[in-house]
Length: 136
Image (cartoon, rainbow, N blue to C red; front, top):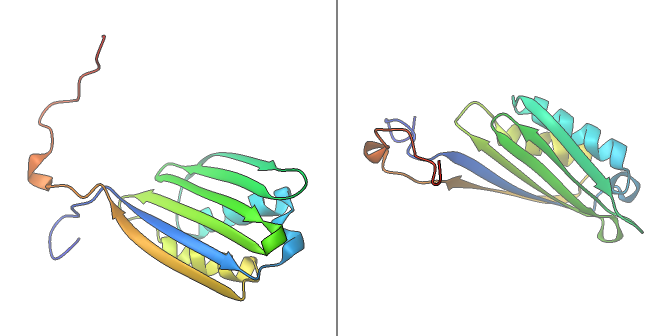
């Protein structure tokens, strides 16, 4: 519910930044995958798929695809920094809970969290019919 009525947005997009993190952790692709998986579970998301990559000479990028959308990470061990996006549709996931988990997991001494509402809509203008596919 938003302002006493049905939500008028499609999703929440949380942007989290983590500074002064454990440098060795930020360069460990297996550990980063484990932490993002745990963050997805912590916020109540349903995990669909995962893909992570370690860059040379250092750094990790990855995404956990969730039924509600996605959680992504990019790390810069050389700056002791990680950036995480948490995009969820609906109201069932608690992105703040995932953020709080990651602050501790990254051993971050400074962090920030901002949340945006994505797909702001007039709920009275929902399509009455299924969208059509061009070329079919």
